Length: 494
Image (cartoon, rainbow, N blue to C red; front, top):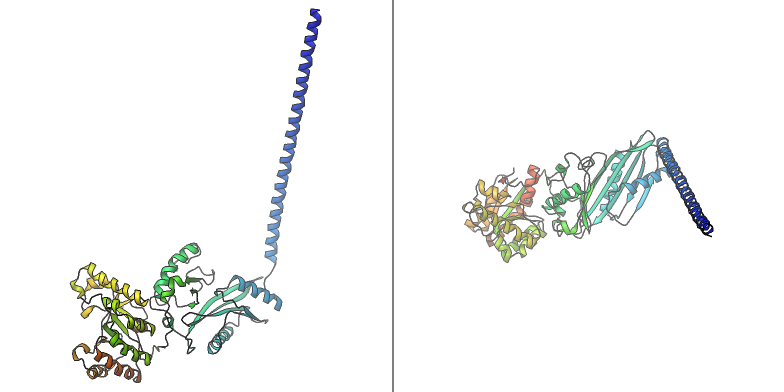
């Protein structure tokens, strides 16, 4: 019995062992199959990746071969139109105008495409059409000439237009851009004549554009794209910021190829929102046209504003299409700025004549700077412009004052002594007896009734004798080729 029970126990143990072994074998076989499946999947994935790499390389090779052996040189009118349309879409510098009128002139010699944005009627349109014809005549040796144009009307009524043109030559199997150039034009809306930038913008507009450009170009373009001396083309000197259009929303400035950006990068542009540059736009377009070859003189008036007498002065200036420079005392602007604002609107220049008319050389540095800064601030507050020229009270200054004011100092080359004679005829005679007034700066004071009466005689006489009246800044610009320079003293420019 005991042997039988022992045999039964042994049999059960062997059976359990066999079952566990069988289960372990089955588990091992399952794991083996899983490992084999994963191995095959990995192998398949590697083959797929390799196949994709091969296909991508083949695709790149095909694209390269297509590019190498294909050509974008047009042979038919349809191909030229397609080329022109692609170029207009990828290389337009004209601000959005809402109108897109295109015309194509296919030729075996020079094919021309013109895209027009918003246009103006009458004489301005005729002028722009003549410019397009001139461009076409001067570039008749190119394979293609693409001209992109648009015109805009600003809130002050100024009409501005941009003409961007590019010429293309054949380089092997491809079209190569040879020239990219932008021309801009400003027009007086009443006369339709071409206007100078300073007839549309105040004299400080370049400073505002410079400040914006410094940040815009440094953040928008890489160092490789910027030219080595790109900052030379965005300072506020006369040669810069002269190409622009004014819309109701912004002022867009254009730069020639190879100036701000490396040559071949195209024609860069920079749009400055009205919220930033709006105060630099004149409220109305000036109607004067200065001939640099003709005599010019700058009338200057000190010690205002004083609306009671300046109204008469401004009346005669406006009636004769003339301007002057008013050197204002800051604390008077605070209380009487009606005529000051009118002076700006008709194109006159406002200068700084200190805050309270002291002898600046008798003040310490801090007081000198305060006299100048407070006056500039109050003029900007009430008139929307910031003076770039100053006149020291009594004409008294020294090197220290010159440095601390940080502005161009304007003296005079003809003193009418109006403050002494208080006689309109004597004041007028002082002007007439000068042998030549060309390039001279005439000193008067706008706070005297006699000076206002003398102005009614002087302005028409100057006009009849061929003198153009200009602001001090304009006189400096036309005679030196530069805007007024801070720290420089100007007395006469003939």
